[in-house]
Image (tube, rainbow, N blue to C red; front, side, top):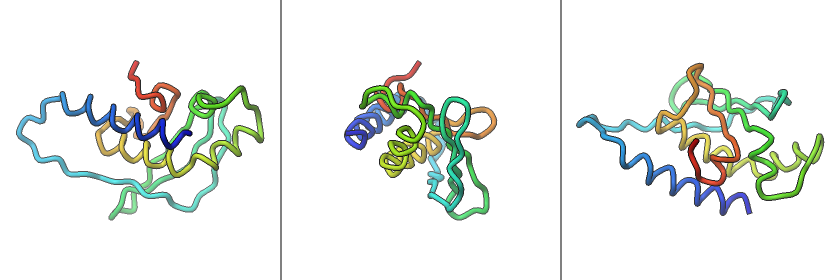
Length: 122
């Protein structure tokens, strides 16, 4: 289910981003790839590293709890982690797309919330 929602979200992100002026600059994609690293539980979500392809730079991806409960009933603790692990490929894809389009936080982290999963922007 999350993969379908993420695909809808990806299409929505592309549609919204296509309305931004490019200023004649060529877009140079900076895809992310999963690297082995611990998934860490944070106060309101989970964090894991991804690497910018072709570099040694890594980016922290933070998946907020609300992004994990969008498609299911309320989850807690181990259930949230299991949901994250089940949806990890779709979440990684969403993180890579957000990063590629410059939608990272000021500190460089890529935050994924329910609004991202549902395809809405605040």
